[in-house]
Amino acid sequence: MNTQTAPYTEKKTTSMASREKINMLLDSNPNILRLLVSSNNLQEARSNMFAYLNQCEQEVLQAHCMLHPLEKKNTRDCINVFKNIISESNEQKTDHSCLNTLWRLAIEHWRQQDWPGISDAFLVEMRYLFKGIIGLSEIYSRSGICKREVPAFVHMKGKEAAIVRSNLLNEKAYQYTAFINKNDYRNGLHPQVISSREENKKAILACTGGIEKDWNDFRWQVKNAFKDTENIKKIIELTDTEESCIKDALENNIPFTITPYYLSLMDKKQDAFKHDRALRLHVIPNRIFLEKMTKQGIYHKEELDFMHELDTSPEDFITRRYSMIAIIKPYSWCPQLCIYCQRNWELLNSNAIKGIIPRTNLKKAFEWFKSNPDVREVLITGGDPLALSNEKIDHLLQEFVAMDHIRRIRIGTRTLVTMPMRFNEELLEVFKKYHNTPYKSITLVTHIQHAYEITPEMADVVRKLKSIGIDIYNQQVFSMQNCRKFETCFLRESLKEIGIIPYYLFNLKGKDETADFKVPIARLLQEQKEEARLLPGLIRTDKPVFNVPTLGKNELNSWQDHDVIMILDDGSRIYEFYPWEKYMAPVNTYLYRDMPIYDFLQKLQEYGENPQDYRTIWYYF
Image 1 (cartoon, rainbow, N blue to C red):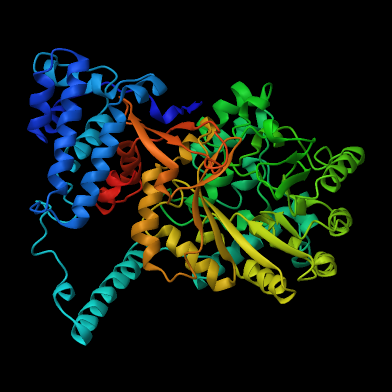
Image 2 (image 1 turned 90 degrees about the horizontal axis):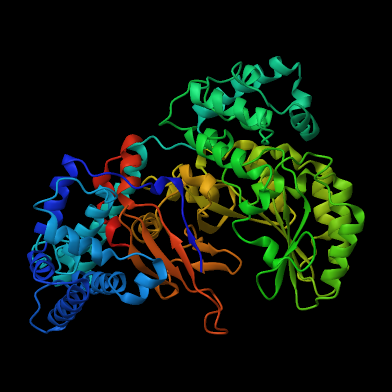
């Protein structure tokens, strides 16, 4: 088993404010405090706590319990989590005892001023759990009984109930619209955005000596990609940190480029909390990313193989985690590197020429697919395979279409976002030649991370692709740059408006170098339950998934696929994931260390968000 650790989970020393939080924690459930203080050792504390939790569970299941049924459900969930984190088996798995920390706090808090290593994040996390096991989550009411809070339609029938319920649903829909308007969420189809980007485009053409015809040539876009701060600053403002990070990336031979088109999407005036924040942070290296890359990535890049693709590669440039689909990576280069990229370890030090697979290796890869007839679908990815020439793309498609057992071909690409002019008439003709349903089909899968990346140019390409029958799916990586309330909902709606299908909502992989992007699993679950559910079903078609290294995707909405098994002193939750094939084979489980919820809410507050808008997050496990 593995436990992933990241820089954002550094242990902190409690302050005077934490002294208050210690008292708040212990006062939130006097029964727990009494049981811990009266225990002579850790084992006695464990026995007392299990007896108490069993009693809480029995009480909530009794007929006379006054708690609302929804509060009862939350209470039982909290009890189960509490049992998990105080169990000896989970202490052994995680090499940590949350119960020991609580016991020490209870018996020594009054005589000890400083508690090194125990953070506010831990104290607040445990306080919510203490309250949750006795029905005082305050989600529905302060008491959990919910007499006045019950919607009026619950006590009505027929049309009268329907009208009252419809009015309540109008209020929910209005909350969504009002929040988006208040935060001024925008996509690239907004008239003001289109106008400002046109000005950026003119400035870029002037800077590069290009003309309108050049702009629409993807080869010109690649050739004139921006790679230094001096020229970028002619188009947009850079903060001192952005400028410093770009320079350090170049000095350490870490790939960094911005296509002219993608640069034109950024706002000229820099504002860390406004519209283009996500775009900048997705392509401009941050300090944590650079430190990890310079220490490890250049000389020991295989150590950055977070998904253990080397362990799932039966042939060079092939990855197989599932029974009927396999990946081929014919190109290890991208016109523009995404900081959160899963395969940055393979792209380091590559360039447009060196990134092409040698013909002999490509032939071996084709032979592997031919010798595995149970593989019915292929995902062509990389790098970005659409950065290859039309001739090479034609060759790839021709080879796979000729294999009788290959029914579907997926192409994973971000050129739709970074360089939509890549989809010229010649490339569309190549697709048209091989897309022949129901016998063979081609599908595009892309990464549109934020609604601000959606543009008229992208919409035009989507129309052309759909006109020849090709579907386009989006895989969003849930990160600090798109996790604000209703922000992902707004992206989903914007995608559907131009004809792209939301497909996956990925929990960001726990790579150390992407710590700046990290969001707790609880926030993703909250988004799914409280925000996405307001949207019609045809818009919320994406599945929330956690990608288990080596083993593949687990659907996060399925609680039977994971458990919270420990809470560390820094407030991190430890999850145990049960791989997708758990009912087919006795595979190993996987341990994952998440970002502390308290730290996440503090970061949101720095972005101008109100943590109270996310108050239920503590009860998503």
